[in-house]
Image 1 (tube, rainbow, N blue to C red):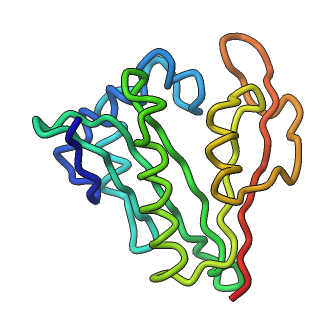
Image 2: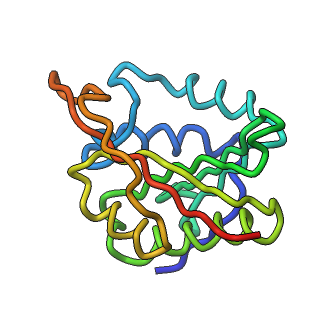
Length: 165
């Protein structure tokens, strides 16, 4: 399978929206079933200099994964970034998440000089937690009943990866 990792472009917004709403992906996001493509377009157009979004795309332009890193804007937290990731259900467990993670962390470590990269993940998302732990992320807190999914309250983990400057 040939795919490319590159910065997200405005034309990727419809494919990104499809990815976010896909069964098997959607349940592990904070999106709503009513989200429209315009939501993704508006989000892309609001990106600032601290927002770094990468997509994994097939040769035909199909978006099969995404990873984003948002650098905190508060000057006292400029060393912190928040990570989010999605991988198409048909392409999970094929190394795309690993490649996206390497791309984002290379940016965080070697270009942005971040000391802390953090994320939140549903506590029952074992595959994602395994990937994050593989890259040095550690569970810092269990956020009980912190999100709603399918009519129920669910727990999230707050995870972070620290590196010494």
